[in-house]
Amino acid sequence: MKYLEWKWASDAGFFSYYDGEKNVQYKLDGDISVNEVGYTIKWFDEESNSPIYSNDLVQWEDGRANWDEPFVVKCKRWTIFEGKYSKEAIIALGAKLHIKVTGKHNGEDVCITLKGQNYFNLSQLLESIDRKTTTFKVTWATDEKNWAVKYKAPIFEVGGERKEDIAVEDVPF
Image 1 (tube, rainbow, N blue to C red):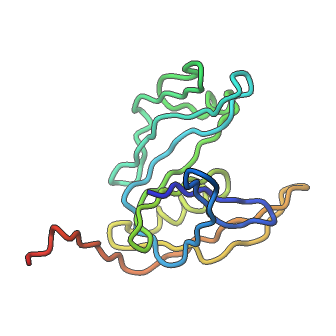
Image 2 (image 1 turned 90 degrees about the vertical axis):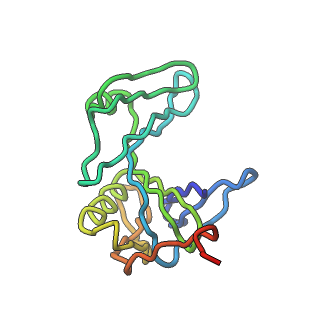
């Protein structure tokens, strides 16, 4: 599986993954079929000088996440939050909620993680389609500006009809 993150700087505007040695640019051309949508916490804890991470809250069939599921946020040294998801508690930690979409792109397993406005834009699109029958795609990136910060934002659009991959072991001959 390739774990893709959006490189948003104004001179970037692409997805990339870490291959064990370096970050590699990944072109998301074509349709992406969604297998699972979840939510996770990612950020950086200054005190412990380590990343903040959490378990995933997985979205149900009806499109809603199970916000009552046990939620644990940790950093390198300790658990910094445990209990039901609370937006106020996460903001107090200085952490960010990310959307985490796993699926298939050109036959490869991919996991796309986004935050902020990109999270919102992808969430809106996924709510508007039937993920069992329809795919989505990234068509291009727009130049954006928030105060003095310039960045690029991916544009998500409805893709084509979802085609199921056939595993070799499923072929009858």
